[in-house]
Image (cartoon, rainbow over all chains, first blue to last red; front, top):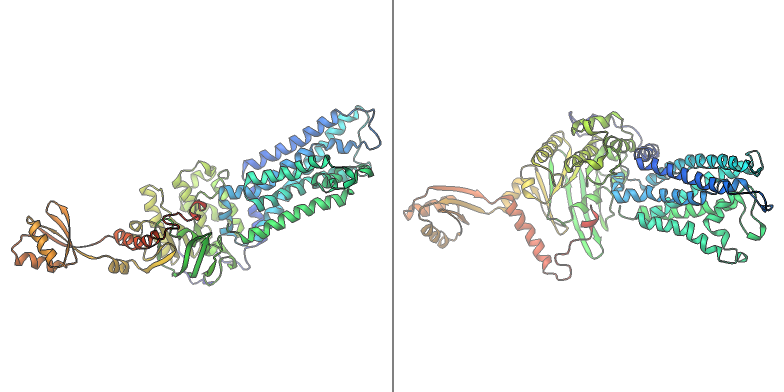
Length: 273
Length: 316
């Protein structure tokens, strides 16, 4: 590169040319600034927490002792709001990408940082971290509120019980993976409406359809909510349900997210911005 | 320095850019001219690596754009001032761009001052007027103190004040030794601003020369005369091989004859002249004439006559 160009005030700030090159660290800072400098981020994360905690509280408050059975899982009941929370976070993940397309910001972003893989990696890390922190807040709040509501009926549990802490933290990991799945779908589809439809189809419609299939077909366990849902259960599903174990199921969900993101990245590097 | 070699881009069946080659040199303002849909924006997008060429290469300072160590420090571009998130304040927008290239935070305030936006730096950009948005886009382009600046139709929709401001800014940038590459579909805009011209039509290079060369090559010799006997002089001029455009009130424009020929013709026939002046056809006329031929040629191809290339909509 030529540095012989003479630069003068007032326009030139006479910036020193540092060693190295624009890379991941700077792009990460840039993406963090982007996500924290729009109000919609805060609104949507607040909605995510309120919906997740609220639905969990409803489920907890309506649980009564009686015919609860051996598989009653008070931790899982208090986290029931994740069924809606997964949709919200996945839509947010998709919007992280599609809003850059709808505003045209993606072209501005790539004109300052043309290494596309770096841009996507930084975006995914920032979004993933925000999703995880929000998820932890939502899950712990859901757990404590849910247990408080159930304690009156003496059916509550504590973090000290086997696998309960794993289930609560697992809820946050589940949300993060769903968010990243939405992020990947956004990268593939680029349009908000299309990405939201895909998210709802994959996370919700498949789940409902699978309910109608005989469990002996063992299709149901591959549905994202069923696979990823095992990690926020402290009491394992009945063997007859043919579900994955907690971490295997979570791995399957992460696999879906990885496929979406890698597929999206391949397209993103090839396509015109 | 920008170097474009054999650049070709297709959108479906439409050839948006067709084997285009040119260089943009430092220290000058190079005007990139062509009618709407000629391929100017597409070419600029390929310079920035946003669109992939079907064939050919583009380099900035000898490197492909995505190989530049610090892209913002080498190229500052304003392609579409509205291509930003409206919910973000001007300052946050500039900050997130600056951080991507490890630029110091104070640089954000410096460029806000250059474009005169310190007062509104904290406001969300969705409330900005067209002129404000344009200034914000220029602030973003100047963030990295770049050696090359590239503006796509920067004065579109601006008021006269804004146009003058951008024109002076570009002159100052070129005077500082930077490469200034600016597109326009109006020759009149470039006439007073650019040093060099790259003219394209339908994606093909039509002219690559200095503004002076362009005028010399493309404006026909014309003489403006005012006389109380216009009919007589017109007849004589036509028989001497000139063509006449009657502007009324005894004023006419003689094309194809020099001022001395017209003056002599009048003297020898005893015609009074109240005015005799050489005139150059405006650059706008020359430009229209040049690009009209490229448009005409394509208009005779029935398949996509007059069709707007697909990217015209995508660019916004």
